[in-house]
Length: 120
Image (cartoon, rainbow, N blue to C red; front, side):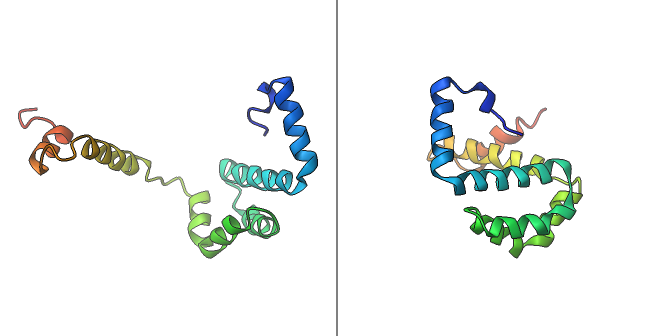
């Protein structure tokens, strides 16, 4: 899947082609990353170990080594439908409000902004 490459201008296409011709390892790294995205989207856990081996031989070796160190967690993330997205969203909202109120109020005001009035 080549996201966004169809919308490039002629000049951008020429530039991308020149970079790809000059740095073939960059093309290989992009292909490896696209393979990882595809594996996550399709939830094909059996491709994980071959992907790690392929990734270790490319520019994304550091990322592939990190995946290999915690392969059980990555495998679980691929095969399960569990997500902590709702929790992360609430934490992000809390941090945003906290930054906006820096130096203005204490916990009682922060609680009032996040939870709302007690009469609701």
